[in-house]
Length: 170
Ligand code: SF4
Image 1 (tube, rainbow, N blue to C red):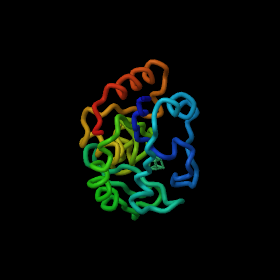
Image 2: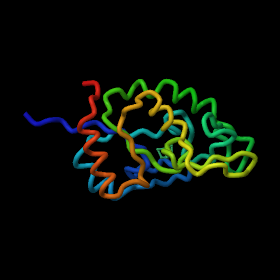
Image 3: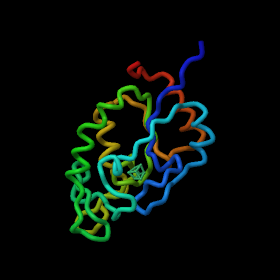
């Protein structure tokens, strides 16, 4: 009997789906060509699943590296913090069958140690994490994770090996 491919979560825009704030996608050829044959992807767009529209006003992380708010990049009166926190409080528990997650870099929701955080209009770090990526890592501290800025051959190989060893729920 053939083994089933491991289930791996992925920021949905990386698969070429037009779910970004600007109505575009961010398809990654490396992911589509090298990882799609190995894994079964579980696409997740946290902003759309939380109820935000396509397109939507862009947001950024503000106020704090550890507990940032999500406020409008161009209109500071926009604040989607509560709707995103509510989504992030419930979604991770639904993903127990995953053996890994591939995040979209620099996103205020999905970025993995690659997202800028702003305080009073100044960028205080370029290595923050998006609120959804942070929630996944908190819920599954040992889950193999990577983002699309780390897809060199060595990192890809290490990620694949980690996913194949990860004891996901059946
Ligand atoms: S980065 Fe995350 S929240 Fe943004 S469009 Fe992609 S999947 Fe959705």
